[in-house]
Amino acid sequence: MNLNLQHKNALVCGSTQGIGKAAAQQLANLGANVTLAARNEEKLQNVLAELDVSKGQKHSYIVADFQNPDDLRTKIEAYIVEKHSFHILVNNTGGPAGGPVFNAKIDEFERAFTQHLKCNHVLVQSVVAGMKEAGYGRIINVISTSVKQPLDGLGVSNTIRGAVANWSKTLANELGQFGITVNNVLPGATATERLSEIIKNKAVKTGKSIDEVSTAMKNTIPARRFAEPEEIANAIAFLASEAASYINGINVPVDGGRTKSL
Image (cartoon, rainbow, N blue to C red; front, side):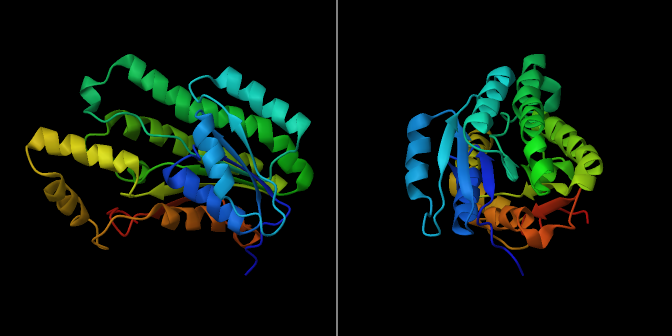
């Protein structure tokens, strides 16, 4: 099985922590040249210093705000002109705040739509020309199992994630002829800062301890534990490889079996 990513250039968004950081590390481990993208330059520099360079990889970063699609487009396109195009794009960014969908304010939907769909679209439009030229493209969107089974208390996230999944499937149909695949990785409960925040909020609302809330959540998962970010990154790295060249337009849950549907 060919998992070698040497001489491939990967752009990984939201890569200063959690799943994004783990994905960047795994792609670098397989030989890719990784470009990190996030808004905190100090954190970007710290992650950059941790990436594997044993195969001659050359890594870099872009400071970008995913609430500003126009600025993001300018920075990515300038980077491509100055340095190189990309073979791999990992769209990943933090999820919207929780809460019932009925209580959500209009601007919450607008912010999430901008951050998750508009910015994903800007990035795809910026990198596809290079992928077509190379005859190799992997667009991997990190979304959520909520696109298969909406999650209680995550109303805005459920709504926007579903839009991203349908956008992705449509892109897969359009770009497959160029050797470009588009797939979604759907993490379940993963040991990240976001999950810690969700558990804390639930503990406050229910009056239960953090341990009680955490245990109850784990008991809904057949694996009886949370995923580690590296386990999500493994799925991302596989989809980025040559070995996954005929996998296109699908959702891949990485959730320990929690999702009830097939």
